[in-house]
Image 1 (cartoon, rainbow, N blue to C red):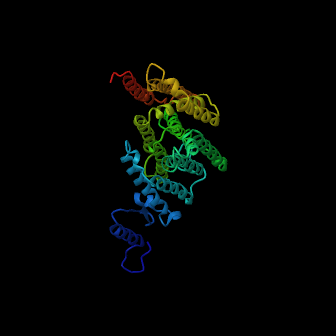
Image 2: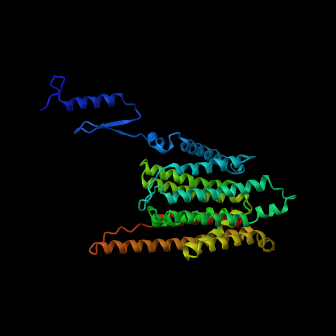
Image 3: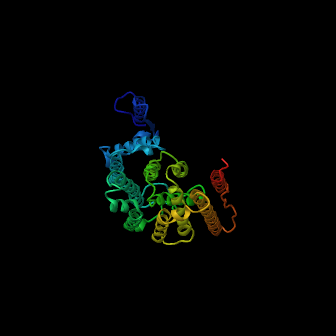
Length: 409
């Protein structure tokens, strides 16, 4: 054995191990070290804080400051949901728009993998573009609403008021963002991947549900009669916070299942916010949700082109808000009665399409598994827990609504 130069008979390996022990004693409580006993190297494991805050592309912490201040901004607005509508007053909507738009723009300083991990819940360039585009869609709707409520006078600027209050501007925002997202996808066509359909959820119906809720949030951007900030706020939050969830997954802070479940819970919560918002909007949310269901049936159930779908949905909403009221006012019951029924009929139709789609996906997976190993029958078919839970939730909400409109409760 080779002796060390100090002449005390201690081997170099032992000295290295002693140095490792000293390093471990002097390390802070927030960091961990471990020794590779075969070569004496010290490997430092990053803490959660280091993983979140350390990035060579953002040494000035500009994106981090924007990100955590955005979370604080959302928290404050959510505390003030309800009659206060997020407490947006004066120029605060403009500050909110600039703040959250800057957050998306600052994300482009980061170098991320070009190719998406198959089924993974991590950011890739195409998604980063889509995240910015669809966040800007909600922010544009908030900006339109701010102009309508603060800049344009209903009596003096009748033309501008009609333009901003009608459905044309909303339709233009939605169509423009769809076109921008398609262009963004073309920039990375080699690594193109659908955000929702390309993600592995714990059940195929979860993919359908996520797409369905995206449709609902987009439909709210078309609701010209909806003159509140809350659901645009929720839409922007889900998109931006989902990017944060993907970042945490890329840094291995949480599991794939934990983060995809969190995303699903956020989408489910947005549905309850929508139901609550309808109490302040004279059926505008119910009307938008009904036509969103129609769009889901056309697009996801029948494969109709999305530009045609959103044009049909926008035209339907405009007619429902301008042409139908005089007719519906002459009906035996309040318009809310008919819109509530229309919503739940189309909602359960969407649910039926989702269950059918789920069955087809599971059948295809089973056939693929059997083709890889013809002698094996170990394919684990997903249970119906998620589908059953969805049916129970929809049935409970529908029952409550029916009892309400029939004045039982």
